[in-house]
Each structure stands twice: as structure tokens, then as C-alpha cells.
Amino acid sequence: MVTPSVRPRVLVALALGAVLPAVAPADGPNMSGRWKFNRQRSDDVREAIVEAAGPDHTTGDAKKEALRVWIRDWLMGLADQTAEHVATIEQTASQFTVWVGDDLPTIFHFGREAASRGPGGGILKVSVKWNAEQLVTEEKAEKGSGRIMSVYTLLPGGKNLLLAYRLEHARLRKPLELRLMFDRAGNGP
Image 1: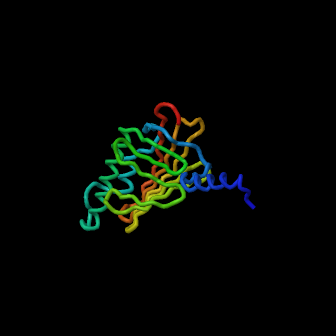
Image 2: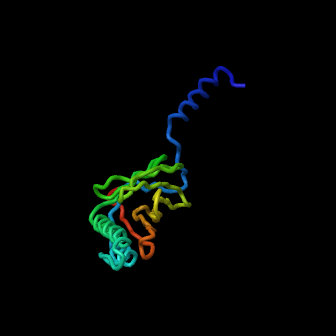
Image 3: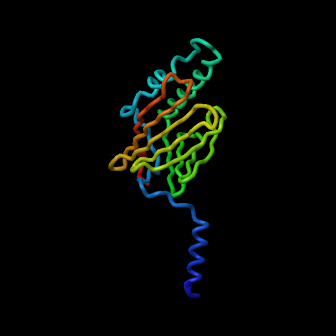
């Protein structure tokens, strides 16, 4: 039985639980901050794109090849942008947000799938979860065959962030797999 003196505290706790955001699992480190791409310690992005996506022109059925060439061009644009800009991560108890340079951020919500618009205009289902000390994001095309999985690992000392990136699409010759290293730009979170 709840006594009258305990009832107000129970009501306040219930009210706060209804308004406060859900707390993300405390399974991993806070990766918030600004991160500068370290080209010397990363895979060769352009080489990996060419290997996965092929040449910058159609080589057969132009109708089938056009999407592959478009994906390749989009990836090359991202490669240029990553090399020139700083990635920013904001991580809270309820969400993980990441963007590079002046791009619009991609927001992942802990504990639920959300929708985002992909580079070609299609709808992506986006999710985030902890896998031990690694934060794993997934962007999957609602229609079609595109899928991006990113695994973020904050290295000991908190000054370096390793991003394992994998892009799958039926039009690519093989999945694009990259290991990208970022150095903390400024002080930690």
C-alpha cells in the first residue's frame, strides 16, 4: 500500500519518466566531438571505390550501368568531402548524430528505427545499437538493395576514432569496405 506521504514522490517519478528521454545503454564510450580525417592511417578511399564500383563510365548495358556510375560519382564526392572536412559527432542518452562538413546530419535514435532520406531521394531505415564498446549504425533502403553499416570504435586514450564502413548495393561489383581513422580535433567531450 502506498502511504499518502509516498504518493507525491511516486507521481513525480512517473511524470518524469514520461517526459525524460529514454536512456541509451551505457555500454560504450561517449564519442562526441569533432574528428579530423587521418588519411595516412586510413585505407585509400578512392582506390577502394574504384575497386568496388568500377570505372566512371558505362561498360555494357547503359540502363543497368547508369546507377552504378551514379553511386561511384556520389562516393567519390564523399571521399573528397571526408578528406577536406571535420566530422562532428553528438551523442546523447537518446541519440547519435553524425555529419561531415556542412552536410545535413544523420540522426540515429537509440532503441528505435527511424527514417531518413538517402542520397538518391529514397527512404532509408536507420538504426543504432551498441556491440560491446563499438557503436554500430545501419542505414538500409526501404526499397531496393542499398545498405550501409558503420562501426565506430573509440580507441584507448580517446584521441582516435576508427570507423569501419561497409556499403552494399546490387549494382556494385562488390561491397565497399573501408577502415577510416579520425583524430580528435580539440578537447574531448
